[in-house]
Structures are given as structure tokens and as C-alpha cells.
Length: 282
Image (cartoon, rainbow, N blue to C red; front, side, top):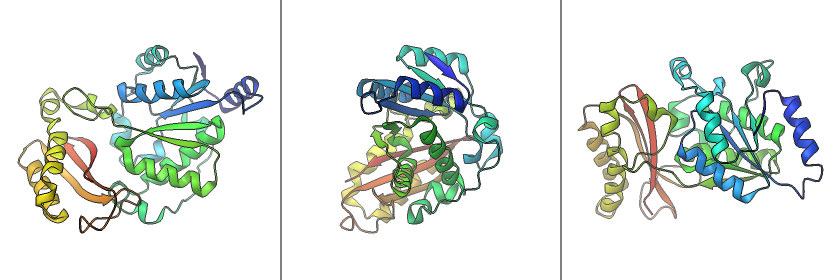
């Protein structure tokens, strides 16, 4: 595995090994490190479907609207490097903040309705920061395909819209949520959970599955209320939102007949750790 920390160096390398871009394909997995099996699954698929697997590790400061969250985000370069080698990563791009932002990037993107709900509503500026760094990484790596997990479903939708808006020549490949054996969606944040918190964390997914089972007996509003009440029964949980939305612009579903694809999204604080998850209802 080759590691690059500067934009100039990785661009020069990729240009050299891929003079004819039509013959050598690049699969790209952008991450913020603290890698887990969910990330590795994206990488295995990218490796299988492309000639070259490129992974980036960059903790993007401008997508954090909580300074403490940024400071506590786990950084484990040695462990990450070993995991990358285990899946056959060809190239790692690991720039510093000054390399990615030699000066502030003040670009503002308008994602319309998509950015005004759920994560966009709860974390002002978050998706603009995501869009800026993803745009930069796509411009640097010039991948043919880029792989993103469906746990961050709204982020995936934002990136799909970004690529469409900017007419970027990259295919965005959605990948299923990877879960622990007990159902907890894999996340770098999980390692911040205490033993007690980790023990109850699987009830997030358990509650979502139960909600799907009883959906036909409820209206969307009453099902949301039921889920919220289930979370509040657990003293370690502090639910932030429960939403039922259509799966395109993620707008609220008022009636089960009002949309073709319907999903439930939740954000829950478990202690001081904020976790998100989602499940398809119809």
C-alpha cells in the first residue's frame, strides 16, 4: 500500500498509473478513519469492482458543528493502516487540514428540501462541510466509482445530488448497512460507548424492526410516537428525532399511501454519544 499526504504527490501517481483512464478504473472510499467492518465492506466491494482501490482518511473539521465531537473523534492510524492492508488497499491518501484547506473554503451549496430535515435540521452547516470535502476529494482522486454506506442515508442522498449538480463523472455506489452480531449499526462512534451503554445500544435496531412489524396497525404519526416512547423507556437513551420519510428527498410521510418508498430514521443520544440508524418500512 502506498501512502500519500499531499495533493500534488497523489495526483502525480494516479496520472502515471492511469494514463488511459478508460482502461484502469479507480474505486474510492472516503473515510475519517477509526475504521471498522462497515468501512472494510465498502473497500472489499470497491476492490472487487475496480482495478485500483484508493482510500482517504481525513477528519474533516468543517463538517463538525460540535467542537467537542471533533476533538473526541477517534484517531488510530496504526490500526487503520493494518486494516487497510488486510483488504488490499492500493493507495491511502491521508492529508492534513492545512493540505486540504490552505485557505478557508467558503463555497455554499443549496440542497433544497433535502438539507432541511433530520441531520440537516439538527446539525446546521454539516452537509455543506461534507459537500465541500467530498467535492475536493473527487477532484483530487478522480474516481470512476465512489462507495458510501446507507447508514448515513441522508449524507448519501446529498452526495448523489452534489454529483448531479456539478456534473461530476463519478458513479456513487450505495452499500448496505453493516451491523454487529447483535444488530447495532457499525460506527466509529460505537467505541466511545461505555460497557453499560454498549449493552443497551442494540435496542435501537430492535425497536426499528418492531416498528416495521406493527406499521400496518398505525398511522405514520402514531408509529413515530410509539418509537419515541420506546426510546424514552430506556433511561440511558435521549432520542433526538424519529422521522418517517420518503426515500428520495426524505420529506415527511403523512400517509402510508403518499409515497412509493418509505423509511424510518432515528437519532439517539446514548450517554454523550450520538447514534443514527434507519430501516425501510415499505
